[in-house]
Image (cartoon, rainbow, N blue to C red):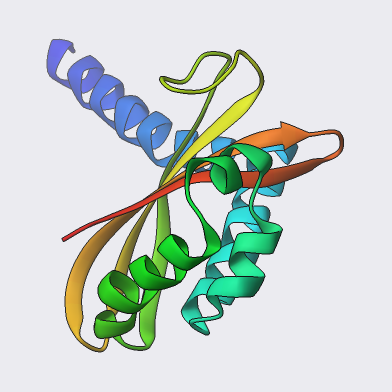
Length: 142
């Protein structure tokens, strides 16, 4: 009897772990933030530094010049090549983010593969700006 209970408890725990990511993915706020992140990344993927700079939030634009951003895209993103796969692995929300004013933020991590690099992590910080999310931070970890 104890063994059957242990099996049921284990199966329940496995099911809860499998369902939890689905519940998070269906959170409308998380979905909107991920959509905004993916839209912005699509611009970066085209290596359009000017357009991605323009679409980024004010905090992003005030932290570096358009020329510095264009250089970063050329130096870091361009060598990675075409996106093969990009999967959101984490989305969380915070009201305080280091280096930013208090507000509503989404912190999203993507596990990505590119033609020139098999695995990288892309970390984005997005700020709520009215009804939309805008990227205010972006890093690539190789």
